Image (cartoon, rainbow, N blue to C red; front, side, top):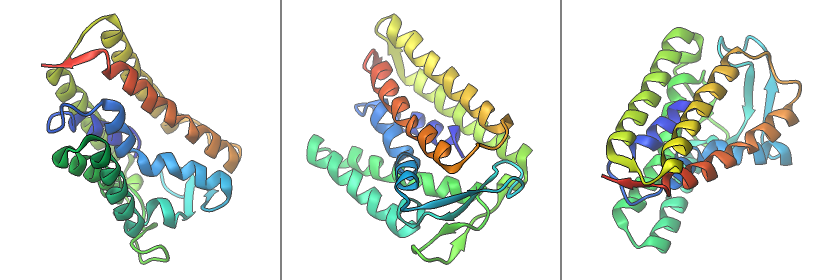
Length: 215
């Protein structure tokens, strides 16, 4: 899942209005933000296997530190704790932590049984990636609902708040479509380096959100 995670981050603005969209995106995508780092360092592993599922050609062979439920809970507590240490807001810290956990829950829906509970298994996944039409519709619906909710809760302070935000939304949609329709990546390192680009989306969200105000 890709834009579905961003949809959850957008929707989280409702219970956490003071929290920047950048922080919400950081939490909602944390697992996929650290995964390419672990891939490039050789700590975790992925295999390019066209046909592994009907949507993604990637076989996630080993990602215990970024995607096992045990470590996801640790990351949730860590990021929520860091937010609380900085902002001293228990409610919003809890939301940040739950956003980290939400990533694993959404992945559970679409992944085949390759998501580990503990670092060495057992492995779970409902496999919706093998029902591509349903998977695409669900993910698009989550993203659209998040965009609608965020726009209903905030308004632009200036042109950056308007164009900066909508250009980010369009970019996310385009990247998602490209991911669905492009041929498999040439090698694993290309996946890792491309994945690092998602950090720029977090910065983009901080920038756009700083030019919007809560209604």
